[in-house]
Image 1 (cartoon, helix red, strand yellow):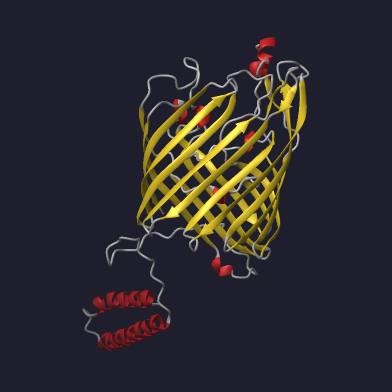
Image 2: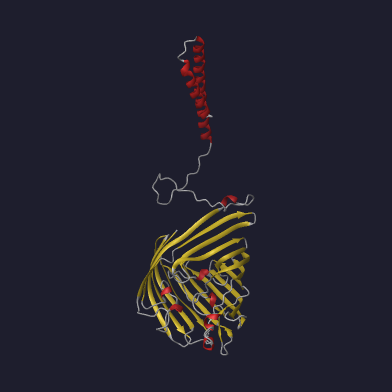
Length: 459
């Protein structure tokens, strides 16, 4: 409206200029009328401006965007982050609580290895990757090596979207510890859930992430059941400190062809996994002020096939199974804790944190499931609000079959102790001593030890 009034005033003024040169009395009268019109227009303009100021005063002031942490006072707010698909259903309860979060860490590890490790895994201690037979095993060479790594740095995103069926939760995250040990994207969780149902890649229902000790080494205890696995999960009970979960998870068969290669070297690469059915897992968890205890059981089918023949034979399947008992006991008001786990089964090495196989040839060179026993025991102690330590031991042991070579993995031992300092809640730094040993079926073994200094900044 203001623009229209100004336009009318300008046009009127323009028309008034040529009229000023005329001496006709009628023209003088017309000029007087136009001047009166201009005065009226100016009065209307002032009224419009007054009304606009009154309307602005009655409207609530927009919420100021929060300035980033550390920004100087008076600094302009940063750009808004928009998640166009994270919108609540119109009739959902708490529909105003839809939001997206991001989190992560920047971390550097400085490691001195007293002996040697498979170079692909130099940034962490995996007993199965310690060379025993040299020359021949990956990592043979001179003792002593220094490694700097940022592979534990990570980034993740979570969303929470209210719907008429409950709240949708998602978690997508990755670190830089590539599956080959290189520094590139390694997907961690790719997970979504609605109520009791969950889909995607997440911690296996067979494992207990809450028993992972407070260490700075990336891989952690060799005897822990640890696997992020694609799965479908249903949780029919989760209340009053009790939780029951059922899952169907992606199958995998870790195969050692062993002495079959003496019959035909082609078996070394021609024998491949053959997985027809998903792994079925059930778990029960009991939690209280004292800590928690958890039991998980699994039944699975592990298979093999020889892909170098038209019919993919020889081929076959074996039934695997396993039980995992774990928990944590709290002490001194929850400041300290003892975490533990004991697992046993046949063909469960795919779920173990390090070492072993699921299938291997027996004495008659027919496939057999390989038994595994795996355990860990750690104590986590808080010296103060700014200092803590963790110390413990873990082991994964396999009962090798007669058809495996003497160089086959038999046992992986792992121990660590650390002192960690927390100058603020978002920074952790500290020193950790690690020791590991690989032992083969024929009794040959090799230890390794290292010192690791790490600094982690979380956000």
